[in-house]
Length: 393
Image 1: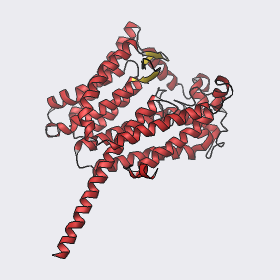
Image 2: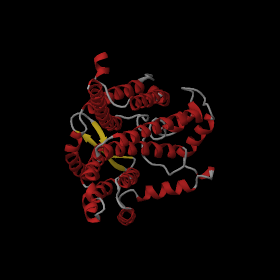
Image 3: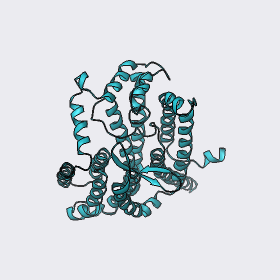
Image 4: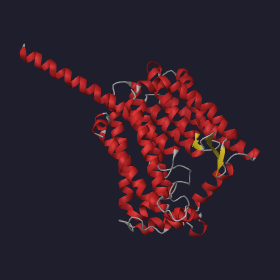
């Protein structure tokens, strides 16, 4: 164990934040799945707790291995991952496994494991965007260069994700735009990109309405349901149960394991886990979770400012923004600030492949942090030696 700790580097606050979020997940998942495990697993109420613990243990192995890799390696494989994402997303649209009316999942033959292709594409996309932004920094104000080498790749991925998973596509669009802004892309070019994005979204919606295929009806229903949020009689069952959970929580909550809404709220261990957190731990517990995500983002921003090379800086901030933005969207859905989406709460919602992709993402951020620490350590050592030489002289 001592040798393992010596070989573990990177921002200690990020490590601590990740561990804290995982502990919250174990507590809430155990509470939210107790009744489900009892009925489906023959009384073994700890089944999903141990399953989630196993997922996290493998996730930490992935995170640790990823943080040991020099982050410049990710620059070299970024193009390959991006290229693989395109046929994978096309395959998902054509033959992906359907869940809740959306083809989002891909099954790996032989082992029965499924994963969302958008998770893979999201990781590959931000690695590729970080590479492109750093490569074309000297030409960043030339619209043709930016449009072909940066905007177009993002547009392809977003358009392939949007028909089956609009919430993820919109999240990637907003996060990418923010990264472009940080990367010094002209505002007028971002405005053109925004107009093109809106037109593309309207086209996807129109095609879905005309052909009867796709999720246009689902999008309409969710927006319509959100517009009825002030009418108790017309609110969707899921939204109403989430509000009851929040109301019961008060400021300090009903206590760990004492939730009653977990038995009524659909997806209480996944998409709607945040209302259960508030019910059991109150508004105070909900604010602590928000603080943990913002702490992770703050450390990533500090890392962005400390990293001397553009690729590492863009890579760390891009991956961090998308993770925290997803968390904020999920929590906003939980408290009915935005329409219902299918996004999970990173590192807290029960999952398998989604947790592992998140672990890989955080491992890459820690890889950048590890490099920055080593570089600053070498610089400090060099400065110390120089000072000693000057004293002797």
